[in-house]
Length: 150
Image (cartoon, rainbow, N blue to C red; front, side, top):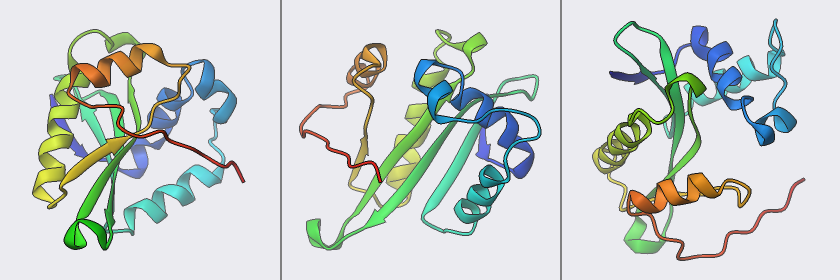
């Protein structure tokens, strides 16, 4: 298994994984060719030193997972850095193989390398299995998250 920075060539498989569940089907527009908005978002992510779009490859070189890490500088915690993990997906054919746990262990170490004192995430309440998975990794539901869709 290899963790690496995503490239533009990875975008179709990443979007396919993002769209491959009930919630993702509503939010994403996976079709070929992909809408240009995904490629523009990739350029923005790639040009931002505080964003890391990462994929995991299996031994055959197939992209089988993705996540995005954002590093947020703020004044609290003595000018600390908070890492935010988003858009975690493992390809449906590879779920249950322990890849997600290994990917999270990698993300935790990467966050430490970047000097983050905290790694946070949100998960949709409609994904109870994801919540249990994150709790098994040591994440705690210490705050109530809120969103305002614009």
